[in-house]
Amino acid sequence: NEFPKTFDYEPGYTAGGLDALVFDGPNYTTQNNGVSRAELRHLLKTWVATFFFTDKMRTKPIVLMHGTQGSGKTTMFQCLSVMLTGDDTHVVTDIPKDSKEFDNQVTQSSYLFYDNVEVNKKEMQVKLAQVATGYTVKQRKLYTTNDLVSTKARSFVGISSRTVQKIQDDVVQRYLIVPLHAFTDDPNHQMEPLDKILQRVLDKRNALWSELLDFVNKL
Image 1 (tube, helix red, strand yellow):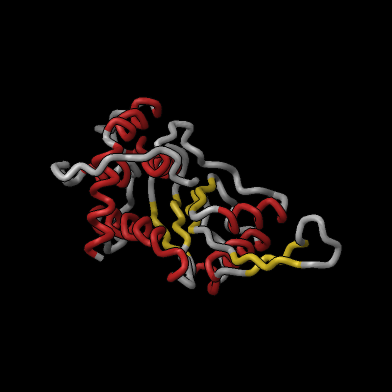
Image 2 (image 1 turned 90 degrees about the vertical axis):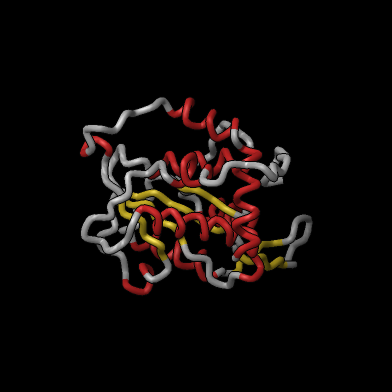
């Protein structure tokens, strides 16, 4: 069960919690990009809303949080994971090096968040492009010799990376690239411990889920 902990819908929740506690965490780069923080938050929230329509989305765009260390790219995925699951172990993992393990993950999970992915490597670009377009994995059926089972990749994937150089044109079209910069560039920013940030998400989880479901229903 990918959402192991239940939640209670709160009809009287205060709107804006999703932005404040989940999507406003990264230090978005908006200058000279022609896009605002509000638009980037809306983009990410809409991407999450598509998790509910796995079978309808033939192409699943990959969110690429691009920025240097200390820009909040991983923290956003951790907050999102905690909100979705109610589990404060905040599962954001390294991408598997073993191709079979990668196949297992993308065929069994609705969403995956990978940290510090080297997207400029050709092999990695091929993997991610296949996930976005929904490739089919053929595996031998257990306890048989020749029988094969075909399973389609179904995951929405979010990744963080420090570089976007040397990405092939056909691959970059499958990314929703969100540019970030380090909080050290902002003298007014106050850094907080990650545990404190995640606890706020857990404390407001009912309200956050309620707001997300209402957002999905408006799409």
